[in-house]
Length: 116
Image (cartoon, rainbow, N blue to C red; front, top):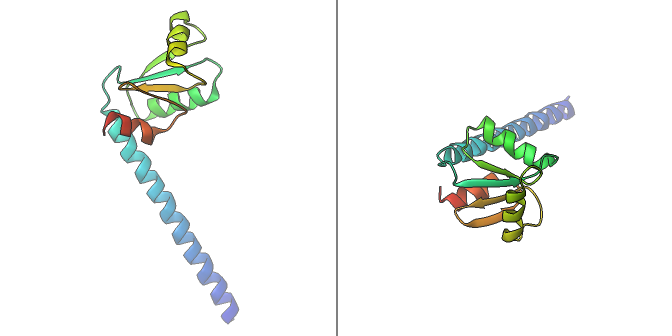
């Protein structure tokens, strides 16, 4: 019986730790979303392509969190492709936030680049 109590106690502790980490992660994402939701139109520009799954993920995240962003799709706009090439873009999604350029979707970086 003492062995069973140890196993149950360990399971309870593990559940509490994992649950706490999940809550903390959710809270962090919500705070980021609130900071980014204050973005003005044009402050966040995403260079994308129609077939890019990471672009789709970023698009969904922005929409779910009601974040203003402009999208420049290289698949449908030659002007976007040329602007992307002038930036020295290497892959999509690429973000331009207040003159700072970065490839890959990272909401924390975007919030930092916005100064929020």
